[in-house]
Length: 182
Image (cartoon, rainbow, N blue to C red):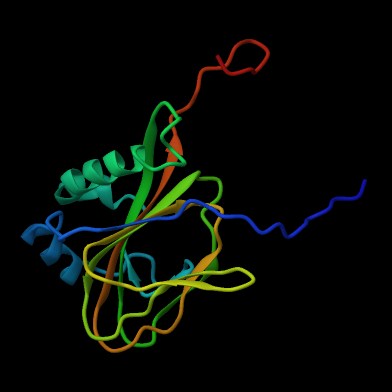
């Protein structure tokens, strides 16, 4: 058997929504500025990072994640689907020269990044491809994208780059005895 892996250029539905950052409460801001680095740079994120269940550990994010999920349900990639669930979420706090290694979020279907606080010269999110595509880091910006898209963050400049990121899956569909969806 021979497996082919063609490089097929296509347009993937990335949605960028600029909010007025009303989702970030004082409680969220204080949490993001003071959490302890749980992951110790053992993930692709080479910056201070919470565990992957920040939404279970910190009720301060409940309202924000509910609103993000509402926006996801309006995403053109998601609109035909029945229901979506956030399966994990984390906060990353970048200092000067910290990066995120190239990666994707498979098996999730969608991922998101919400810029909680950006000051100075924060690094953009870079989607990799024949030509890289950069999305500037701006406080209040929400990016929803297919989880299969490879992305990275190059060395952060001076200033803060705080993000809430997460993965989203379709709620499990029920299968019949043959394994077919119904």
